[in-house]
Image (cartoon, rainbow, N blue to C red; front, side, top):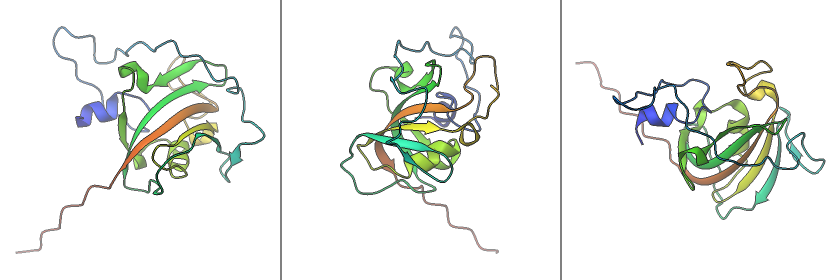
Length: 173
């Protein structure tokens, strides 16, 4: 996956790069249409049986994973996901790139709620996360209709990719 695509395609990153459109393509800022994906019945607020962290993140395991390792700072993750606002509006999903599409992100560039939630997961696990606004995009949308407030994500951790090795520093000559 190219760097531009990795950073621009899905909108979950705190910092993104603009996509580059080929001549005759849709404009670079045109977004793929979101599929018809109904919100979970508990999207309005976290359930009483959810696991709550110190930051206010609430998660609930939907499908247990098969792995034993957890993502750590510096690694990349391969995920499938969908995100809703608490009013039930779907605002982002990996499915917009096609059924079964797996997105890959450096964990350190994701919103704080994702970073924390993913570090609780193991490969193969699917978890619902209720992310408070201060761990996501805040209470005010950055663009009209954009995600804001508490956000709810269903995230499947497909795989954990080891952190890329840093190049050795060259000594002075």
